[in-house]
Length: 463
Image (spheres, rainbow, N blue to C red):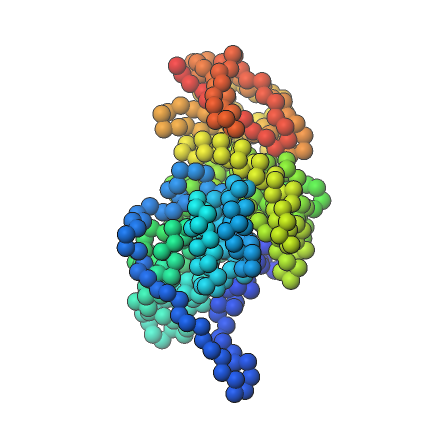
């Protein structure tokens, strides 16, 4: 079974964060005997909630656009206003620090650049205080516990961390843990309690590892309860080097969708944009297929892995990502830009405020194990043709919407969908680029043609 984990159990994202997290925990060592090492001046520390700027909604989750994020942003030497504008021009509206942006001075500079660009949020990972709370120390008032800090000290550290960054409008919150395993849930509970006490509004982000099955769903729900989760995120990179697609990618989405629905939380997924060990460099259709399949399963935010190309010392044989290691745009940049400014700006924003009602696989001889096969219901009576995913949403007005996604990332699809006349009087097709609706002549049936990895959305009305 192919997953995003290597044989050591460390996922690719986990491998990218290991060096920075370890550096945060290591003591400062003098350069040599008798050599004094000057300490840098302390960071400016302000209040956890800055005066004059009201923050009472969680950034990113409360914005009026589909969250489009990037992992592995430009490195410290490339964090400029022009580089962040370049990221924004690709359609990305938030990023998670990394790629050696693991020092308070560097991170605050990145936030200042994002402030200047506007319309960009930043999730800070590897802040030293947050790393100590989430990774290295046990938070307890039992002073006999080794390497522990009191709950009061944990709140003080959380206040100090917030005070470092909250003066920046682009600051969105902290990344606490990546590849969050069940053994870390209790520590996460204490960390979240400290962060809530300091400031309850900013995002407390953690990413979950891939998985499938009832046990995986139960673990996700346990995480929700113990972490006070504001949203769910997971990563699975499906484009394999042998030219196939990880069959558990869709199964993982089915289980995560079910857990998110039970918890009442939005789910974000990762989109593979880079080749690395065991995984191929994805085509435009590969990327579009991941995005549209994620939307079909109710995805409320995407995160691209990666934006900047990890350098060779990171290992894993990373190939060029959206920006190569020399800072040049690759074809992936333009592919993602087209998908972001077309599919996600239109379709993603349209679906963002809707509720995912059902997801079924139609015209497929062997559907993935954790998915639902199509069967006639109150809106769709029959389907034929090539394999597609039929995903139904309901909007705030009570109208139903049908998203049809090509199951193939390599071949075009043609399918026919028959609609129940007692439930559907009119059908309008949504154009993702113009965000306009066009009436379909035949309200009783849809003849659909899709390029590889593509989708189309229909409004089904009773009037």
